[in-house]
Length: 392
Image (cartoon, rainbow, N blue to C red; front, side, top):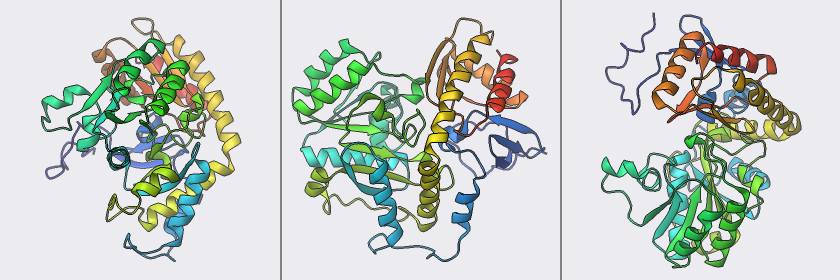
């Protein structure tokens, strides 16, 4: 029996539960309590970049020769190993890794860093974007959240879509005041249905930030570690952020963790004074999971990224074959696929039908969102697309 409606008298939820009680996940499939198998286009909201049941990662988690816990102010060799690996993978001059428990905390820490480094109060972000559920992250997200949380941070300005060359005039006008500590955004905005900024906008933004001594923060909690076909989505635009937020796929979904990367110049000014601290930052189990996941990704990067390209082509060809009510707008960047179906209720209806038929996916407003893992076979992708055809 599915107990999703009955076993939660004490369990709080911020969002309605999907009617699915998970008991197992393996490869590109999730299994429920009744033994039903689901094609996983959800990917745990982007954490499962490598798929489920990776033996190398699970073995690293199972090992016993590590401390149960390490006080954050002690020394612990695996912390240094992971920090060095993150510096190797990160774009540009990002060399210092700060320990976080997840993406929301990483975003708040990045905002604190920017404020402390520049001494400025304002933040510029993209309207409607999602950066987390802490007070700082909510403040730079959708303005409508201020109706529920009237005490969010002041001084948060928003850029409306589209992010094109014309929008640079407003960016320059705002940043020229020298009131802004940072611009923060996702290089590819997943929660708005995989919105891909124009390359000219991104290059211009980077240039204006440098000219006005405004820090550029890239929130790559969901786009990092290969999701868009490069290790970090910032690399598509050949920009070098001053601060970069990491989370989700940093452990391939096997443990909670986040990180904030920054430059030596910023670290030299704020390091040791900013006071970032969490009791469970980089827990030993999470560190082992992350090291195993990132070594796996690094070792097989060529194969995995080639498969991402093939998956992108499969979705590009397959989605137009689905008989949606209206012609969809399809936005694809690597293994991030957004399908704008123009009506929010219609998108939710498709999501529910898909769940009933054995396909897991998400919606963002009136867009369908697919985040397949990088090892999904073409056969499984086509299986999921066939299920989607019966839901439109």
